[in-house]
Length: 123
Image (cartoon, rainbow, N blue to C red; front, side, top):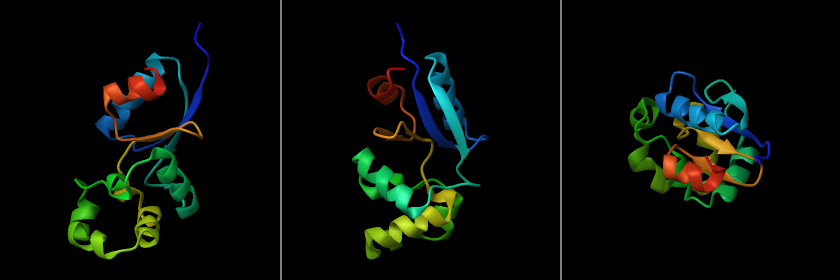
């Protein structure tokens, strides 16, 4: 018997990885509230909470293959910034955030790996 769960997924509709993640969640009857990450990125307070819940290093939250990351030359700059500055930067531009970000309020995943989704979301 499956229990109905709802997650919030910060995603970009044209992102193949996001579509795969949503498809995988949908197949397991996980209800989703999809938020367009470019139009509505999480604010710095929300990001701080999500980063803490994910247990990941803040560097793992950056979309390192994205154009904006490369244009801003963040590879060289991030190490010079405080965590607070990095969070502000992520909050200021949803294109900098690795996607999708999925949360149920307690657990958080960043990016999409099938094995990780099976472990965390049971899908």
